[in-house]
Length: 207
Length: 207
Length: 207
Image 1 (cartoon, rainbow over the protein chains, first blue to last red):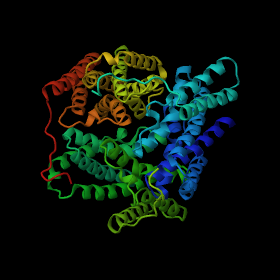
Image 2 (tube, chains in turn red, brown, purple):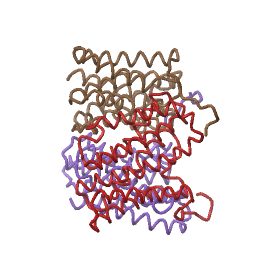
Image 3 (spheres, rainbow over the protein chains, first blue to last red):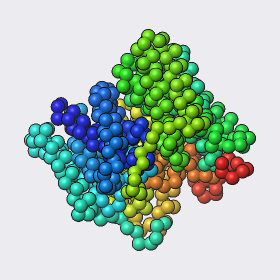
Image 4 (tube, each protein chain N blue to C red):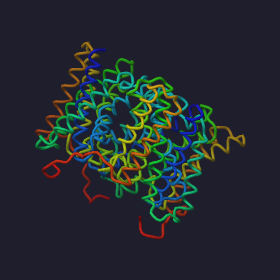
């Protein structure tokens, strides 16, 4: 239980910071920062909890999550101007949040005894949907769908790692750590070295 | 209970009208008007009910809400051409709906015995998410995120007013009225006199 | 029961294919194809199940749905280049999926004993929201809101057909078939012959 709560807090904090940076690009005020930060931070986990019928939803049951997200937003509001390339920070913060959130989502789904396919999907949903909401609401090109980068693939690889590790007898806690590591390494490799899967390319012009 | 139902109806009606006006800017047909009107009218309250696990969701339990929203859409379809500036009407209708919906959302969350932080968030979510869905679906710049205007801040101030009033012993019904008044006055002041909080501005060009 | 499961599978398969084709226009990789396909395929039914508090959500209770959607995505990834006009295919696939999904959503709502207004709305939501999510996430103009075409109207007509047929004593299964047929014929007529309802047009330029 403790490791799940920790993972949730960590992903909330880092996703919130990434959301606040996106808010800074949209030149919002401090309440706008907090709004986007909270949406990003709890969006994915909220969808996971609603889908699995887990009530209360994690941040309703434990307000710490929201307070953490709001604190991160305030911090970013007063320090974002110190950062040289906000876009670069967004991408890297998002990579950490993704890894941790996939792990948290996978862990929560395992606890409710879902079959492997659903566990993997819940991990992917928890990791990617908060960032997707952030980008759709703020009108940025969704990181999830950026061409030529690994993103959802990292989430999937991480979640599958957890499921397979557990099948091989690894204790849950280590399986979740392995999940986060695999997810983050793939994402970092994609950002730094351009690792990617072949994308669909049509011969004729966009029809 | 009665005041909550009344607040729900009022916000449904006014949000529906604002949604129908946005549909008129997108030149939809009468069914499209009704669709956008319903989405706007019940969107925020639906998220609130799902998050709080209140079933049936308010408009599923009481179809009057949908019929009101559809009626408002039909009315707007046949009268929108009489209006000189639809954008201006949208903004003002939206301000009333916001105030009333924040109040309704806050009231509903109080009834389910949530802690203050969650009550405030539910009020904010109920007030802002319907309009946000309207704007995202119709591809307008979300009012929620417009620079240099108070919007979510008004929702937050209203919801906090309600929570504090109740803590000071005011009966629920008056606390909810105070909530709507504070929210609307702030929003109206922002529209009319340009009241706003300082926004984030970076020195270098958008990075 | 069997006909409902069948309708769900059919709409999942065809919506998934339409989602994968939209992913091909956005030049995503194979995992991106699967993501958009799954979102499109199960989006509408998921909203329906959450609103009606039906748990487990249909695709969590029966993983076949997700596997079908993923299979459709893989198939499209390797064959989309054979297709001459992907846009045309998207529109037609979407029309079949719409008809079948409206029917499935209506049927599920009838089973839970909702009043007619809610049954119709659930049919409409199931049919239209998956495609709406696909288009919002991939930044396409939502088919749902395209001017001068019947879309939500077809969903509404189909759902009303089912409700009325049942009121007149038709067995559920035939009422659902009638629903799908009415919905699809209207949509096909709109695509082929331009059938539409009058749209709102303002005299002065867009205000």
